[in-house]
Structures are given as structure tokens and as C-alpha cells.
Length: 129
Image (tube, rainbow, N blue to C red; front, side, top):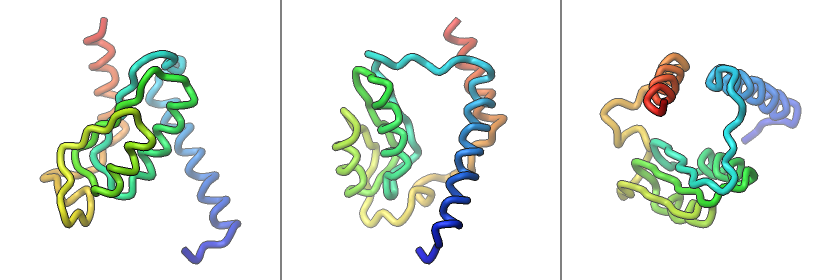
């Protein structure tokens, strides 16, 4: 990709900072969930390469869940098949051919803001009480 090691190291450093920012913001001071022996459902809008889903599943796998289910709206057939080797179960609504990109299969594919994520998390917590 014509990127040198220093540029890559800097990108990794910046992404780690962003990850830690989001973790702190989204958890709102709450401890990490205990996923040991639990069924975990990972939801993604879609799988193009599947790399972000693989990263998520591998991170969760370290927490010893009973089962990991990946649920996606749309995916490239080869990526869906590859993810079946990572997750215990993969549910994908559509695998169109040709695939092209995740976003073209949605009417509204705008990014979810931090405020929307926090609102949804708070709503979910309130409903669980």
C-alpha cells in the first residue's frame, strides 16, 4: 500500500487513542462486561472484507464466551464463508452478486454518531432495569 513503517506505526497509535476514547465514552465509567460462558451476538451492517468482524470476534474470543454469533445485514459470499471459521454461527440476510460494497445495499448508510451510540446504550440499560 506504499506506506512506510513509521506512517503505519503512527496510524496504529492514532487508532488506539480513538479506540480508548470510545471505550471510555461508551462505557460511561462502567466496568468491562464479563462475557465468560455467555452467548455473545456481534452485529455488523455488512461484510466487505470481513476484517473488522474478524478483529471483533478474536477480541471477544479472548474473554471466553460460550458462543459467538455474528449477525450481518449483507455480505460478500467469500467474506461470509471466511467468517464461519471465526464465529460459532453466522447469520447474513443477503449475499448479493455482484457485491461491490456494503453501503450500496442500504437506503441510509450514514455513520452512527457518538451521541446516537450513547443514546441507544442508555435506552437499552433503562429497558433492562
